[in-house]
Length: 308
Image (spheres, rainbow, N blue to C red):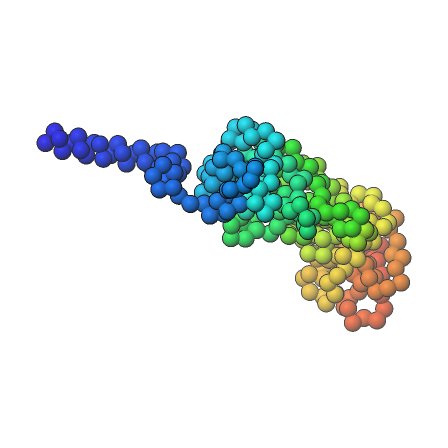
């Protein structure tokens, strides 16, 4: 009877040890669990192969948890490129391992590095602007963004070549309609009026993208917070042009566009519609897109108590 009790106790103890052991410790010791991507990209390097880095890459792929101390000992090798130019940070992004991403950023991984040495202009910040998918949904993207900002990331960071094409973090988040992420960037000092570049010329900014995506709730918040107070004529015109992209048809969206336009103009009574084309406020304030005459800014309504 006593032997049987010891056997049961021993079985319970072994079970607890396995259950409470560090992630993958048992599998590493006895099963040699494969990590196919890490083994392909971080193994058999000559002369730069490092067993410790390879093991870290495996653990990242397995989904283990990390702290900054797991990576600080690597020194400059934290940003070392391996097979197909991969770094530990980009490997962690590809694996969707948020713990590893946070730890790598805390340990000083370089977020300005491109994901490829040739043929790419994507750095880590670019991946923060993606809409999310099966591996990292929008909440996962925002957890990654929060780590980036918490560890000193620039809320106005860019990617690309300013002489050709360059995106920026606020505009990228607006394009993917990641409103929660955009609020985080605003709180960290992001500039929603910062322009992107296309073919070496000014292209678009987060404010225009929010307008074109008809993000009325967010725009109302920004108006209330003073983002539109006393803006320049050129900025306002490009904003109105983006806001007027949806042709007036008297529906709820049309009314929302006109309401936002009037609130913005209330903050900027100096604005003048200068275009000769059917665009911006000339388009916004039509009753219907089929009207031949351009719309007219209703300044009497805008400057009254009707608009706040």
